[in-house]
Length: 119
Image 1 (cartoon, rainbow, N blue to C red):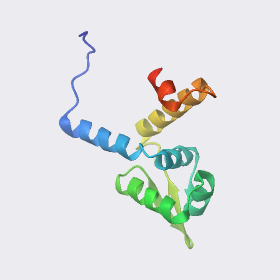
Image 2: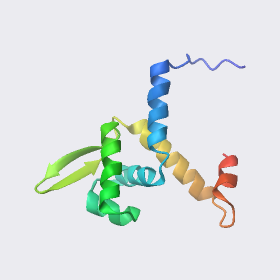
Image 3: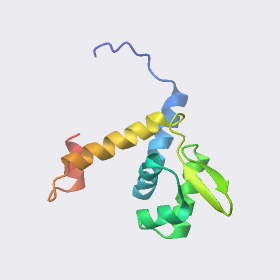
C-alpha cells in the first residue's frame, strides 16, 4: 500500500460520513440536496421539481435537516430550505461530482449498475 501522507480518519468521522452517504442513498433526498445546492426553495417548489408528494418531500427535508445537511428559515408563512454551502461544501462537492460524472457518462441503453461499475 503506498503512503498517502494522510492519517486514517477516526471512527467518529467515518461514522458521520457513512450516515451522510446513507441519507443521500435515497434518490429523492439526493435530488433535493442537488436542487438546494443550486439555490434555496420551499417544500412546494421542491416537491414540484422532485416529482414527489408534498408530505414525502417534507419528510425527506426533515431527515436532511436533522442530520445537519439542510437548514431552513421562516419567510412569512412559508419555510425556506437551503444548504449552507460553507458548512456543507464537501457534501455539495460530492453530490455535484457524482451527478455530473454520471450525467456526462450516461449511456441511454446502459443499466445504472453498469454505469456505476465504470466509476
